[in-house]
Length: 247
Image 1 (spheres, one colour):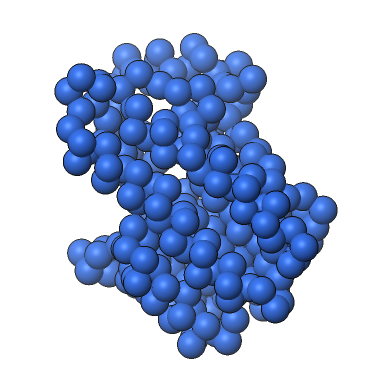
Image 2 (spheres, rainbow, N blue to C red):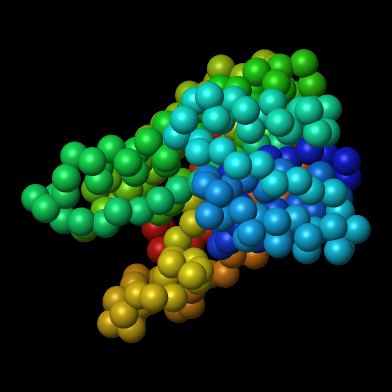
């Protein structure tokens, strides 16, 4: 489905990003694994090794997407390795949860820098590289960006911003055969959610009509759809993958 396509997935050493990278590789894509700092290099190299074991092609590139020059270097490194870029998945994200009255300006800004500015940086440089050949940009937002959540005003603001950004950029590039869409995951089981107290998980479960948490592969499947020609007439959309949580 993605044979010989070149895909960059930011923040792809674990969780949803890793699942997307593996799923893309299984569909025949050449994959660029992105990690934010050298302390993640070993994990990134492990993902590359697993993809190569499947018969796929992959490289790992270090870049902090919140830094414009590093984001530019990520795209340039991709083109140097594979000659083009067809798919960009803006997945890198962080949380720094805190009630508003206790949240520092630094905690607010750091989340926006990675989650929103990072999407801007990579999309700007990625779209420029796609101008002649077309492509697909997939931004990771969240149901929190739609519904909000107490203690996550910084995260909610960043993810709501991604939704507005997605729709605006989709309009800018529709005539250039560059599609821009977003995925809004609900509660997905990852390393980050595994450490939550059981009472928190039980509370969240009451808000999910399907009465279960999602898994990363369910997000990856939607990403494959949006990256492929199966979604060739879809742009500017936000697809919720949340078990009905944000209906």
